[in-house]
Image (cartoon, rainbow, N blue to C red):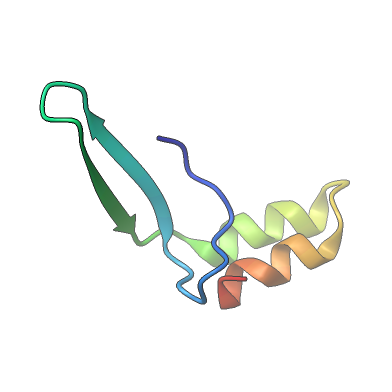
Length: 58
């Protein structure tokens, strides 16, 4: 799976592993440096709102 912006108020990064043999999904959450990621957004050309969303998970 891929990491994306959360929409469930959990600000950890999330991804999914799919086992093709058992056909089961495993959902994972991991901590990461949100402040550093947000600063890169604020300093770049993306909308500032994307950076603020990282802190609250929506």
